[in-house]
View 1 (cartoon, rainbow, N blue to C red):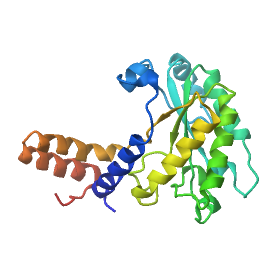
View 2: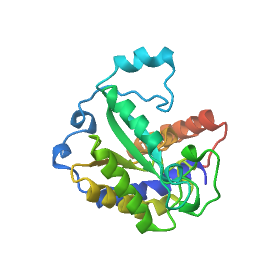
View 3: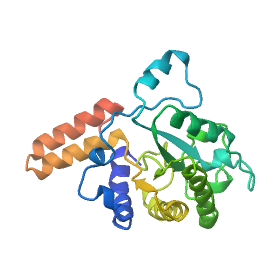
Length: 237
């Protein structure tokens, strides 16, 4: 599926999910930036922080950061979960003064009915074969890190991008809602944000805005040029 086609498919999935997810009172009527303090965030390779970047990371402490926790990486064999590496990362981020967003991802393995991969932490996610078992994993994860002061979560990441979400974007709705329910069951203080879209979706969004404003020619020109520059190809418009 081409990037624009995946974006079109995913928009309805995200909107349907958000329509069923109540907005926390603290964020109603305000932007996400103002709700979370509009602080500058920083993301680094949390598993290993090179010494040359430590000063920069320390300099932005107090802002937000994020970390992906992948079910297939934590539970490589059914029934055997190993949290030690994730604990180290979470403690490191919090210890440096950052507010942490945990993105809960499934990945590619037995849990999603896919072949195992050596690069499990960056493998694309697919819907779980057992939704109840998935929710049990999410509840354990959220309960574990709520005790450390983590209360901000996302279910998956960039579901319009095949490298992050390998299934049909429409399949995300059930997974997103199930994951959100499990998060809230485990932590009544939890806040949930949407999974976000990849930067490749911006071309479609900007072109649509120009078309809605009545400038069809400018919309088509922008659309074609944006994806030509990003991919080296022209998509039908």
